[in-house]
Length: 231
Image (cartoon, rainbow, N blue to C red):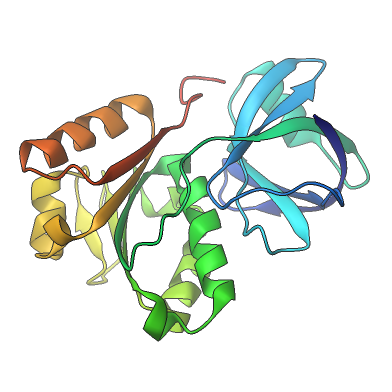
């Protein structure tokens, strides 16, 4: 089924990541973590919804590249129309109380939707125990940094930022290098007791999933975010 929405706000998350907020069609519903298919003259593109279902708006967040679709997304302005189909996907929250989220780059978008929904449900101290491992190249590439930091103050959420190039930030929450099972286990000894949600570029998702399974962890959900090479 096709839906239509109107752009109401544009938010620059980083120099290369932009969020588009739109009106929410009255009869459109989705679960946190799902995605839609955006329809445009420059083709179609699957984008995760980067806000909670209980919000009164929709939000789509994308890393801007040189592709035609990406440039069209970057050129959107208030009052422009967006047509989409959906929702799609099974990367949604189950009824787990202990969760480790693993995000690489723009793979944060479906996980951010989940955390936003958990936050809005309230009573976080009684609802669960959440840890986020979030990998990026540099600190300037971290989308939703301020929002995530505020979430960690309002709910039972611990965040570890992993940076390929650890720059001037001096914070216990930052770690150098790529995400890996061994590094995450060092930060979170009880990681084997948790449900694992992994989202990011396909190769990263495949590698980390294999590492978890090699250590006997099977309770895993994954989402491979396409478009890291110019889409």
